[in-house]
Length: 337
Image (cartoon, rainbow, N blue to C red):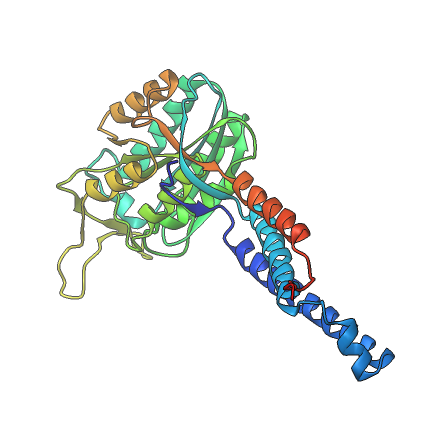
C-alpha cells in the first residue's frame, strides 16, 4: 500500500484526540480506585484479600489502555488522515476561478504597455469574456491580501470591481504571494466544481511563502496557475508623488529600483500546486493559451493529485481494540497445584 504524502487535513484535531484519550484513561483509573476504596470500606482486610484474590489489576489497566486508545483513534478520524495518491481528471467540469492580482508598486513598471497592472487587468477581462461560464472572484494583494469580489456569475459587478482595483487597494507595502493563496483558499465554495486559482504577478515574492501555501492547496484538490506579468529585463518603478509629479523609486544609495519578472519563483509555485506557469505576453497570448488549456481540461501538469481519505484504517484499529478489550478478562490466571 502506498503511503506517500502522509498528512492530516485538520492536524489540530490530533491534539484533541490525544487529550481526550488521556482524560478517558485518567477517568477510568479514578473510577477503579474509587471502586476499590468502596470495597475496602465494606469488607474487612482479610475478607478483602479473599474477594480480590482472582482479580488482576494489570489486566484492568490493559483494558483501560485499549479503551482510551480506541477513543483517541475514533476522534483522530475527524483530523482527516490522508496518504497515497488519487488520480483526479475533471475534464468538462464547471470551474470556479479566483484571480489573485498583484497590486504592489512593482506592477507600475512600464515594461508592458501601458503598465504591468493595466495589462494584467485587460487580460483578466478578456479571459472572462471568452470563457463565458462559471463563477469568478477577485483577490488583490501586495503585502496583505483581501477578497475584492466573492465568487459570482455577475460579470458586470466583477468588471466594475476589477476596474476600481489599483495600487491603492492594499495599504500594506510588499508582495506576499503566500497571503494571496491563503485568502483564495477561503474564497472557494464547498461544491463539486473544479477550483482554479490564477495568480497574476511579477513574481517577486518578498515573504517567500508562496510555494508552501501552493503545496497545501494541492493537497485539497485546488490547482494554482501562475501568470508572469512583466519581462526578465524589467524596468524602474515610477509612482506619482504627493505633489502630482512622476517619480522613480530609488534605494538608500540613490540608485533606481528595478523590478524584473521572477520566472523561477512563479514556476515553482505552479509546479507545487499541479498548475502551469505562463508568461502573460504583450498581447495577453499567455493568458489566452491558459484559457484554452482550461477549457480543454489539459491545463494541469499530469494528473491531479489528492490525498486519499484513510479514516477507515483508524476506525478499523479502534474496533479491533474494542473487540480485544471485551475479550480480556480481569481474572488472574490460576495455576493448578
